[in-house]
Every structure is written in structure tokens, then in C-alpha cells.
Amino acid sequence: MTNTPSDDRSVEPGAPKDDELVQPELQLPDDAHMVRRAAQRYGTVGAMLAGGMVAFDRLLGRKPKEEPAVVIEASSEPEDIEKGISLTLEQPDGETLDVFAPPPGRRRARASRRRRRSDGQEA
Image (cartoon, rainbow, N blue to C red; front, side, top):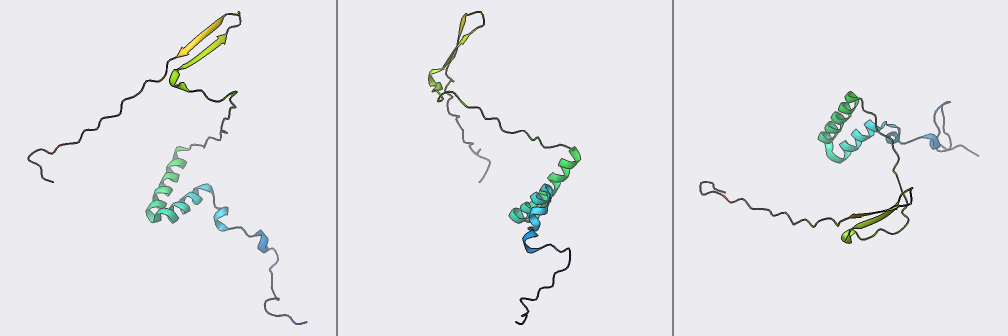
């Protein structure tokens, strides 16, 4: 059996194996990843703007909030609020309290006016 050039691989001790190699983009910190993505999507100007935003964020020293999303299960399907919302609350002394919120008012559409050119202006 002879060794062909494809079978003869010299591996340095301590070198990472093929399955240990990770894409270089995944090893970048979040800030560098954001700048690289901006450069890919928006070019040099996008990378410069993203880098400036990262610099301002570091100068201000803000830490990102890591708050999980709050999910609350409802006991029933949502009701139509066009009729208003009414609640009946029972107080600790046994009395009931009825609360009613009227339906939200209907807003009229915003009227937009077109600007008219004065006689002295040309297009």
C-alpha cells in the first residue's frame, strides 16, 4: 500500500482539528459583529456609523438590560372593547364594586392640507 499525497497529512501538535474550527465571524464580540454586518449591508458608511454608535455606547457606559419577556396567560378570549369594559370586583368586606370604562372615542382622520404656491414662486 502506497501513500498518496492526499493521504499524507502532516498535522502540527496542538493545531485545531477540522471539526474544532469555527467560523471567524462567530468568534467576534457582539460589537465587532455589528460593525462587520453593517459593512456588509451598507458599505463603508454603514460600518463607520455602526462603529461610532458602539463608541458612544462604550463612552456612556450603559449596560444592556437582560430582562426576560413577560408572558401572562389569559383566562378567556379577549372581548370586544367597542362596547366598553366593565369589571365587577368583590371587596374583602363582601361588597361588590362595579367599574365601567367607556369605549375609546373614534378619532377623525387627520385632514392634510396641500400647500399652495404663491404667485411669486415658480416650480
